[in-house]
Length: 79
Image (cartoon, rainbow, N blue to C red):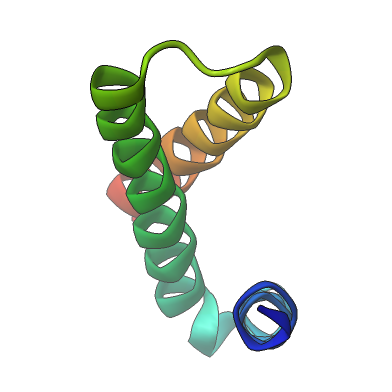
C-alpha cells in the first residue's frame, strides 16, 4: 500500500515539479498529468457504473481530477 499511495504518487509529484521548473520537461509533465488524472476519472466512472454512486468525498475527488485532466489537456492542445 505504501508503495502505491506513497512512493508512486511521490514519484509522479517529483516529475510534475520538474516539468513546472524546467521548460524542456513541461510537455512531458502535462502529458503525465493528463494521463494520470484522466485514468483516475475513467476508473471512477466504471466504479460508479458497477458499484453505484460514490460518497461525497469521492465525488469531490472526481471533480478535481476531471479539472486537472481538462486543464492539462487544454494546455497540451494550445502548444
